[in-house]
Length: 287
Image 1: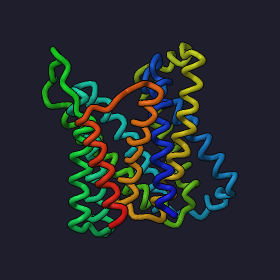
Image 2: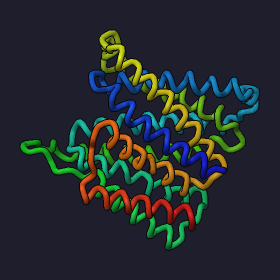
Image 3: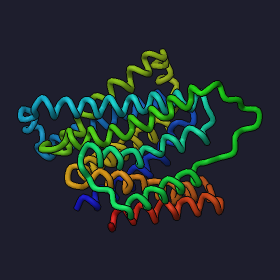
Image 4: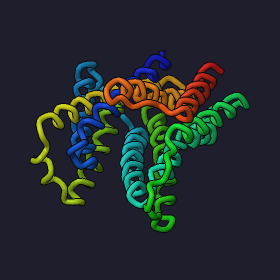
């Protein structure tokens, strides 16, 4: 059953990317992120009360609370580092490093959770890594200069924190209703998201958001909420080393919707990369 939730997470994550792309065209990305997170928090707690999971609040121990909070902090830290890396370096160098989080997650799941990594799974990781690089690597913009190696530092941290998010989240939701765990974790992310906006003094930009952007930002928040609920439900019962790669299949959904709504076509290189990602993911799931 966890496979179904993992695939559901990928589906909604892919839809989120399309909705968010429309919503942030004329909106600061950090402001949009904070607004989407607010929607996710409301949606998460709505699911908690609909399922009666709030009854488990009093049963959450200190250790579980700690790991849920740490998971939320890791998510926020990953976002901060990712956008800082993009600010300092070329996206074709930053994004591949950030996407390597799936490989690091499998390694951490092996070291910290004792999840086995066979030779076949190792080969699958190679396929996923190579495919991801082929999918997202772009030519550097002419005239754009790198400002030292600071971007590399932040890009690596982004990948590390993204991996820690999955591992800490899995530990934190053991013995806890997944809806409740997601709601608590989202609250931590929300605080960090708004702290970024307030720290940058961009809260005043909310008044300038047009109606169309509001609609798509809110819809992307709902899609994100559904994706997170499915993702942590899958992590609760399935191995992190398989759930995380399945979630990354959201790229397939994004590519399909981008072709339909934005007329974006894949190059031969990108198409081959996508095939490698799917092949590697299926290998990890079936083996």
